[in-house]
Structures are given as C-alpha cells and as structure tokens.
Length: 267
Image 1 (cartoon, helix red, strand yellow):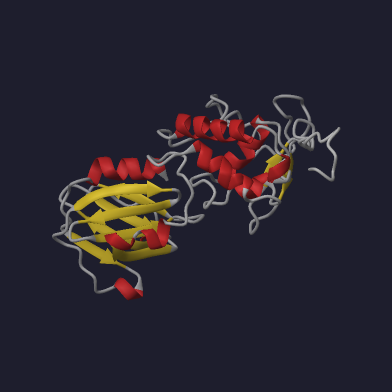
Image 2: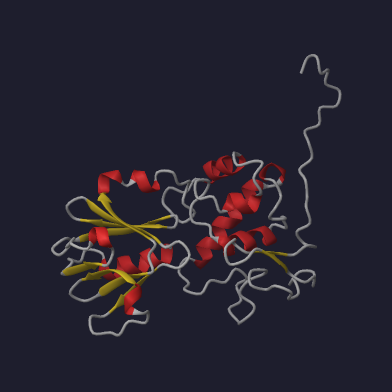
C-alpha cells in the first residue's frame, strides 16, 4: 500500500481534478472536478486521498483492488467493467479497479475509518513499543493471526506474516504470549518492510531471481533454504494460506517465571 500511495502522490499530488467518474451507485452523481488533490496517504492497508474543501476519498484494496495510473490516451491494462472510480487531471488518469471499499467522507472524520489501526509499520506514527504492547494484548491468539490484526500493527500482509515467522524461527500457531523476543520480531518486521517499500516486486531474501524471492511463501513442497525440509502449507482460497518449515519453526515455549523459593502465602 505504501508504494501505491508513493507513486500516486508523485504523479498527482497538488494537481487539480478536471473530471471524476464514480461507478458505484451511491456516488454516481458526484463530481470532484475543480478540487485539488492535497495529499495521498497510506494508513495500513487504507488509502486516503485528501481533497481541497475538506473531503477525503477513502479506499481499501482488500485482496484484489488496485489503483492504476495512465496517461490520458493510454490503453488500460485492466478490463473497463472492473473500474469503480476514475479521476482525471490534465496529465494523468487514476483508475480504481475492483475496489471493494470506496467512500467519500469529511476529512475531519477520517478517524472513523482508520482510528482503530495500530502503529503503521511504514508510517510516521510508527512506535515499536506500542506495537509490541498491542501484540502482547492479543494473547492467547496465535502470532500469525496477531501479525495480520491491523489494530495491533498496521500494514502487515500475509506474505510478510509467513516470512517474518520463518526468519524468527517461530511456528505461526504459537500463542503470542509464548513467543520469545517479541520486540525483535517487531523490529525485524519493520526492517524487512522498509527494505521493500520502493519495490514493485518484493523480495524478503534479497534475491530477485525466480523462485528465490521468498523463504517460505509460495514454496509449498520445495526445500527449506535453511534445513532442506519440505515447506508446508495450510489454508485455501477462502482462508489465508500459511507457509512454514516444520523443522525450522518447531514450537518453542517461553519458560514460566521462576518463583522458586517464594512463599506462596506472601507472593
């Protein structure tokens, strides 16, 4: 999401809209022509287009949505019938395809759609201590589920979930409270996502050759780069698929606090 906002902002930031076309029933008659695009910000997986006059266009990609940029005479890559919003400036056309969430709201009310989010891994509000605190509060949820909880830390997707768990040697189904070094896991998440924020094709391994860009994600039944064990997979098209190495990510439990020698009557 960060790279989408970055590209859109570079092309459209400060530009005046010459025409808009919303292909969703409730906004079919809305015309944003004459408004200036003051900023385009990502917040977790949300995108906020702030317009002059105190109006924000809020979109969320979910699994399949996309904003695409074109020159006015350029042919679209995606089918026309999948367009949900079309914004024209003098030099560019921005098209929202298959966008499941699209709302126009007063800018002053943005908190209503993004106020529940945790610290944004790639945002100005990033606070690792708060992210660790929010993750710990998700116990007894498993760490894989907690990493995808946008109210804990915003911006982590399924690919990063799988890769971060492998890098830290953590079974994705380990309860959050049993994960050792949660602060190091959060720090690693930040570093890996920062390293990929300008890349259209992300690589968590640093290797961009086909089949080498990820340690476990998309590598079902292929050998683990660390130990050679076949990568496992769980999930389907409805449930988010988790990839992991059963050898490198065997369940490890944080030892309970040592209360030896403490009189229970005085504890």
